[in-house]
Every structure is written in structure tokens, then in C-alpha cells.
Image 1 (cartoon, rainbow, N blue to C red):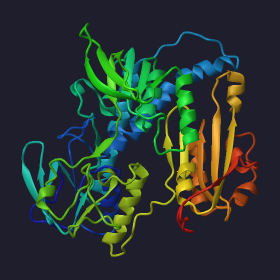
Image 2: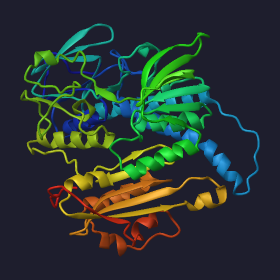
Image 3: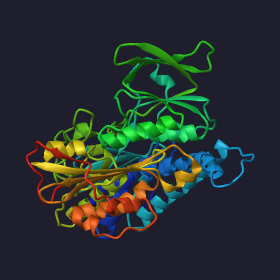
Image 4: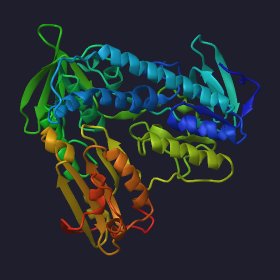
Length: 490
């Protein structure tokens, strides 16, 4: 525990040192205000008593997941290399080694986050933070010692936690937390869910050599993304040997007769039931706001949504003046860069410059293999929101690398254009390097670029990215039924 505590009145006490909480606390402290941060002790797997500076993204989310995506992708790279003249030779994979290196890197980043806050002038308290009143936060240290922090403002930035739905055998199942610390590759693995975590982990463990089954209750994975992109992601999962059970839901999980494996009972939309045998069953059915034991009952003006999320106004303040919330705990857009942006908005507000978070044109990526990246409206969203017509441009092609590797995978690029104005409302891509490409496209779309701007831009050849500036043939024109999109809104 750092200096500061009882007897000190803070301008801000932050509960949670993930992306949003760390950014808000650091920047607010650098602005000259007195800030304290409270975070649970560090652990790779989260619990009611363990967490760590850096939060989900650094410890059990974006960072370790992307490292394992890199590790698993080499299997496909080895196969592709044969088409370029490389000869097959002996190779092996050591999961324990990569997990150890991954954990060391996560631990290093956890230490950096702690130092960043302290070097910014924050008082850092390790333990559980609990709100006693709108101006008091109690910290219970790992040894049981309690400290009361008096403050003018409280920021709740406790993030979210993965969960397993309430079904028979849930205690036998894992979440992504546990799947990031396996010490053995399961021979057979069932992943329940159709979101980005499900398809990402399917690629990871299939790449490591496991037989992977994905149980998805919708006809396509990745609800909320563009439908044509969703279909291609599904096709690519299947082509990489992943068994995808669409329109299927879990019923129960039990120990198999041999006592060492699991039996996952599933039911199709038509009511047909069957069992999938596996060694590990991972649920990737979303994350819930982490609001347990926060003492929210002591600030009754703070309201919560159905899933426990903390409700805030346009400036991230709750119904209780001086109590704020940001990041996954408010369940708006569960992305690390969004939490960082919210933290910066809060810093401005605390300095007397009330600032609303800007949720326009938030780009995102799914690190399936190959990845999907997107910014702006999907075609389905545009049909509902745009008044008038949209022009849809779609290009599907075989990446140049695949022409020699022989890999049976295609890329897809798509643009949604408002017919009346020519403004590009959305861009979507499935294919190698799509997250890197989409970051630049996001800047253009947020700046209000029209299709003519893209058409007049010279491409980089040969590259996949150039397809975004060479799409000249409209695929279809669609009549929409919305009330219109404001000039500043996408």
C-alpha cells in the first residue's frame, strides 16, 4: 500500500485499475488533482478476491489472447510454406513454454501499470474497494486491514467478468480465463458461444492441434457484425477443420462414463438432442459487469440495468452526484480503446471541462484466423437507419499468398455508401491484416470521406488494402427504411 489514506481527502478515488480506471486516474493526477486507485491483488484468473492492475485486457483478455493467436497461427504458416518451396520437416509445439512466456509478459505489463499510476502521482491501494457512502471508500487489504478513503468523487471502473450460464454441470466448465492458462492441449474441446471470444479461441486451440467444436445458438457466429462477413468467418472456421454446430444450444455438461472426459449435451433449434464428448468445455457466452460486493446499496441513487451494469448519463455520472462509472461495468461498448477514451473524457470533466465520450465510428476487430475488422454501419444497420438508398460495394478475392500456398480461403471487402451524399457509412473486411488496414480506413470514415475520395486515392500495389480504393462496380443498391443519419453520425 502506498502513502495516503485515512486523514487525506482525495479529489477522486478510482475502484479498478483496468484500462479505463488507469487512464482516468493517471491523467487526472497529472492534471494536479489528488487521486487514489484501489485494485485487487494480481492473478491470472480473476475471482472475487483477485484481479490486478491492467485489468481484463492486459491480464486475461486482449494481450494474452493475441499472443496465443500468434502462437497458434504458425501451424497454418508451416502448411502455407510448402507451396513456396519449403520442405516439410520435424516440428513440435510446447504449450507449457508459450504459456510461461505469455504469463511472464503479462506479469511484466501488470508491473508497468502499477508503476505508471504511482509515477503519475496516484496513491495505489491493493485490496478490495467498497463504497460506504458517496464520499467514502473502504479498502480491505489482503491481510484484512481496513482503510477508509475520503473523497469528493468516486469512479467505478471494475470492468466485467466472464461467466458460465446456470445449467446442469456448469461447475465442470471453464471460461476464457482458464483457457488462457491451460498447461496441456485438450485432444477435444467444446466452445459454447458465437461471439468474438468463441471464434478466437476456436482458432487458437485448433491451431494448437485440438479437435474443436463450437456450439452456436444462432445460424451464424458474430451477431452484430455484417452478415456477409459472418458467413465468410463461418466458412473459414470450417475450412480450418473446426466443427461448428449452428442453431444449437447447450443443455447440460456431465462427466463421461470414463470419469476423465466430459459429455456436453446440446439441442438443435428443431429439438434434436445429441452429446459431444470432450476433454475441456469452455463457455464464451459474454461478460457481465463486475459489480459484486461494491457497496452499491450504500449509494441508492446509483441505478443498475438488468445485467447489473451501472447506469450513467452522457458524462458518465450516475444518479448519485460525484459517483461515476466507465468501461465494461457500464456495458456500452466493451472494448479497451473505448474505456481509454471514456477515461480521457472523465479527466476533462474533472478539470471543469464537461466532456461527453465520443462513440462515433468505433472500429473493432475479431482475431479469428484470418481476422475480421469493421468500422461504421453494417449493411443491416444501414437498411434500418438510412432514409433513401445505399450503394453496397463488395469484393471477394483470393489473397495473393494463397495463390501459391494453395490455401482454400478467400478475403472479402465491403463498403456501405449513402447514395444521396456519397458518404461512406461503413467498411468491413475479412482477411489477412484486416485490423491493420481497417485502422486507417476508420480515420477516413470518421473524417466524413465520400466514395469519390476513396476512388481518387492511389492504391499501394500489390496489396489487399488497395481493393478499398479500386472498388468501382457497385454490387447492389438497397432501398432503406430509416429516418436518416445525421451528418455527424455514422
